[in-house]
Length: 430
Image 1 (cartoon, rainbow, N blue to C red):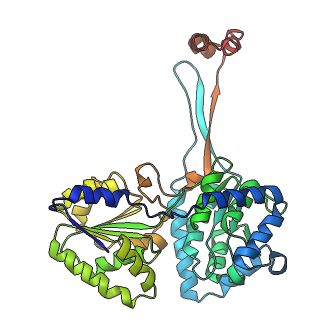
Image 2: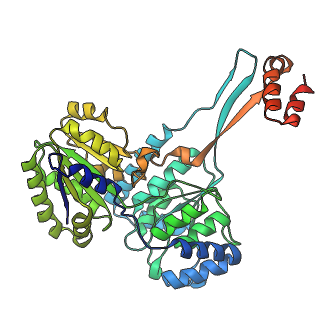
Image 3: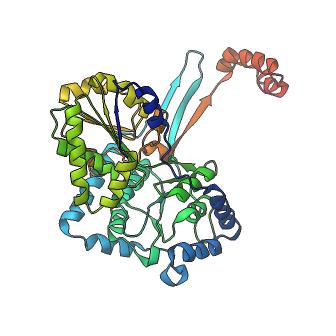
């Protein structure tokens, strides 16, 4: 049953604690199965990948082909209706522009001791992106993962995507063509992540893996972190909407359902300072769900994880919202009020300011990345960016004078730590 809370309730604090701490991520014990798949791929390589793909996706890779060529991607792009192709191209251009502005600059200086020091940024050589396959594939995920990698300067960008029953989504292929993906492999699941991380005879290993997937994909990324870099271990989608009574209840209901329709474990939460408006939104959600093609999923999500919280004021809601540290936060109030409340936001993956800024715009064409931390991870994590595909190398250069200036302090510290060879490497130069 949908949560309904008010800060004036006697048991509000305990109920809200339960809401914050509720686990929505899969409780299935997939860790052991994923570990076995990773070990199998590492030991048997392509043979294991082919067998697992036949078992889970019902695809014979030797018959269907292991890869999807650039020609097929270009043909998929050309075959799209012009308005749809132009929409994907507009999204790609905006995403590229936003992420290009994230690229960090190298730094260098010579300090007062005469030491030259700084840092240099460079892209990883190869990156892999995971794209869910079949009918429910999302071209926006291709753009959001591939374009930052290309903007960062990644030389080899590899996409893995399952094709269950041989099903290939032309929108995904078109997006891959627009984004400049270099290789596409017709594989998915934990076995695809393992192949990217460890490499096989056919598939060269990568340095970073990003992209959404099911519980097995997320667990494979978690287990392989350290062998490769990853973006994050993502959980179910979530949205928090802060709205006053000046909004149209039908619009706010649609915003809540925009995340509920992702998955039965997604979460949509409304904060408002008006109980009558809360009732109106709840009625609108109930009215809109049956009309959705995704009604079964959205209805299950709203019933199990949806919440409406009435506060005495909008300001009272802000500490509660920060505790949730949601993936998406809408501040559906007047522009000036949105800016004031935005200053109070400490934890959120992405914030959507004002009545005319639906979260769905951020999913597609706004520019900022839609790969965002979930499950309260916005307390310490950020959305996907070019930095996920880059690393920083620091450098130093000393001459005799600068070594004489700071070297004795290094010797003192090395001797204090009981590391005589460290000290000697400096002393012999002095």
